[in-house]
Length: 126
Image 1 (cartoon, rainbow, N blue to C red):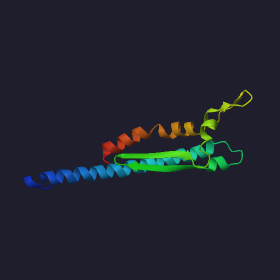
Image 2: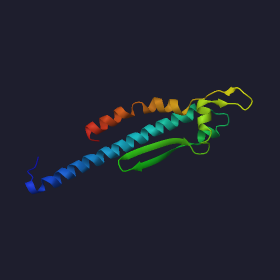
Image 3: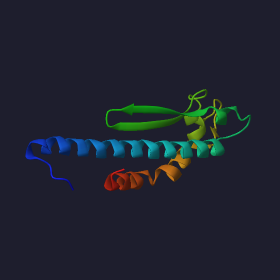
Image 4: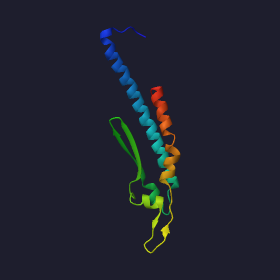
């Protein structure tokens, strides 16, 4: 480690913390992107495929803000239909349509270990 004059100590600390923060932010963004892609692929596989158009409509939306990284997997063409297929619904003349869970199981399978991966990234500094 180099000798640092006392008047430059604060600047060196700030630059070291900024470097650590930037490395962690980049690694977190990559990990969240990778997990979102896994969820998307699994959702497309599990989605009901009468014609295949519904499964092809899924995509990822990125929302990055100051200190936040968010990825949303949703159906761009048939977003109104997702909850009906996921949970089932009542028919007009009585009875119920069965549920076809596809989004929630994909998230639970691939998103369950995301907090542990993020903890490792933060502890290792990126």
